Image 1: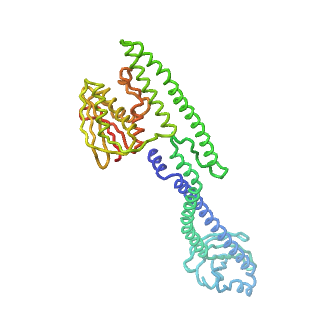
Image 2: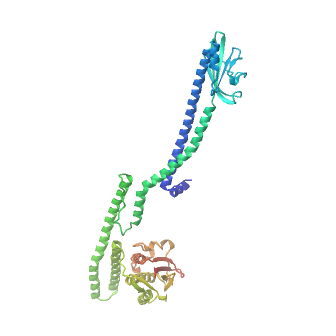
Image 3: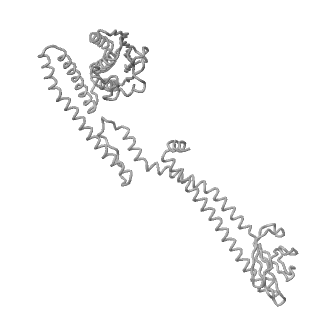
Length: 449
């Protein structure tokens, strides 16, 4: 149930949740208020009826000893819905208003002289309506009398029904109006947040100089925007310092490394010299990769666009790989394909992919170049141990090397594939890793023509 509620909250969004919450609160409050209003109105109207019947009973009681006055008091008006009976001590009807003439006593209550009792009951003899009846005990010169005065509450019932009907129509309308208004007002209030979200989506590690728009209102949303911009400023400063350090360190390492390589050439040959030359070459590649990454992070990859024959690059890198790894069988199926791009960077991508394949291959490296759906596609497959499915995206992160590739003899720096993907992405292409038919690794490079 909790999971379902969470999914519903995510699906509805803040605006809809706020509108529904406001509508629910207003609906509950309006229903309770409506009930209280109807009950209070009915109590007040019933009290008014009781007051009227009490006053009328007092008038009748005051006229009991005066026949003319009694007749005047009991004479109904044109719109009078009041009934009157005067009972003797034995309960017989002595006088009655015209509407209930000849009827039995309308109430069985017999209050003592000076006492008042009230009751509500249905009178079949008076239009079969409900009446509020006041019974007043009176002492007269002719003996005790009971004055019964009843007034129809049909108007109260009609008024109550009308109020309930109005509430039944008005409450849903009010709830809908409040919900729609809340939806619109919350949406208007969240516009700055949406603008901040859209701007935040455009901010990457290469454009940290951008900032979120700060709304002109001096409220919590503006404070949030200022706080986020302050955080972005700190991140930009830290990232810039890190990039400067990488670029400066890589640049400064080139000079002593060149001196080391020159010194090794003067020393001569030997197993130790060969090992040092391999480590120096590895460091040179690492420095070159770091400098490239620093430039990419700073200002993006600068491409020199021209027509590039990928088949020529494939043949060139195949010959280089065959010469460097004579133990491997390097096969190629190449179709003539031309794309628009930077030949230097595309050759670097091919070299990285082929070097990785050769590093892990058992005996064979296969290269395929073809046109597929108006795109150039290059696949490089090896018959090595392959890459687990869960690691096929992770290897494109910087400085990530799988456990079996962490030895220095492997020569990997963990930067080749990230650089290759950056170059391919700058060309509008994709670079993915799959399982080769031989069970090894297959790298698929796709570029627009």
